[in-house]
Length: 147
Image (cartoon, rainbow, N blue to C red):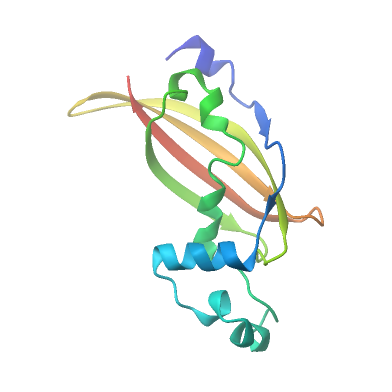
């Protein structure tokens, strides 16, 4: 493990500008992943639904991965790596019109040795906060790179 990586444990990274969620961005995401739930793509159906308007599907939180370019700030991962997994906890719906701030911290760095050699994993916990100061989600991104 490189000392440069370990000294960043617990470091917090803030995205420069909030991410504006639009109905078009939600629709584009839904089209890309094959999501057809009317709560996400049909304004009339969404209006009659439990939230009264279009909301983003749960997996939409994965689209915030590069909002703060946090992996670029970890020396070992500055040149990229492979996504090793994602876990998320949803606190509140993300709605069209929301302005989401992202704050991330380096939660863990660890090594694993497999059949093809040693791999280094970094776990970044991103907290997504809307314009009202409400946490809408927490997302753990796992990035992997060969040693």
